[in-house]
Image (cartoon, rainbow, N blue to C red):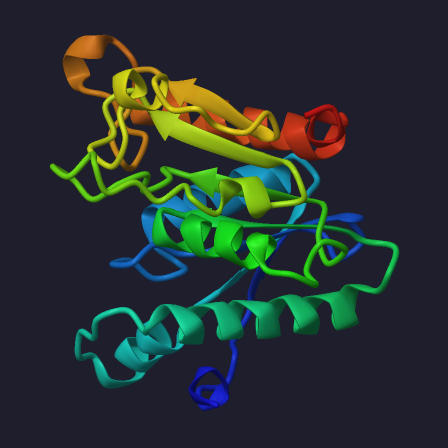
Length: 224
């Protein structure tokens, strides 16, 4: 299958002894080692959680050739993600608490994977960073129809003014109770605020990591 033609390279941050493991997928336009992904992975590792990153086939191909490619079709992305989950589970063993998530498109693929039948016992919860609730400028084209089919809790860390779904828009959605939203003040799609807000990007990223840590380690994912 196309999703397995490119060898999977995993980028691991944090102690291999950690029982909490987060598989984190990148967004559509940036690789697994982008500054955003590095900041989140480093923050999660400092909190005692092992973070494992990977790249979808199109991004791995871009790294090899240097040529930009559009994202793979959704079935390929999901098959590849599932293959990564299986590989990580095999390596970490049954005692690890496994979580999946990602930035933007990567987070959306994590929710779609969680909504598929047969995946309920593979991981404990899903974490999305800047979820693409709709294409920018097209709020009517929502991407949440599969949310009720997700059997596990979902944490979404979203910027107040994210063009893929602002706070004003999303607060009018009828989201399932197992979907937990945490807002980053004045944040855009990368959770970064404007200078005039008086908040720094680092503060928003630190707050995001803190929410993720609490979600994974203090049982918040079990209470949704």
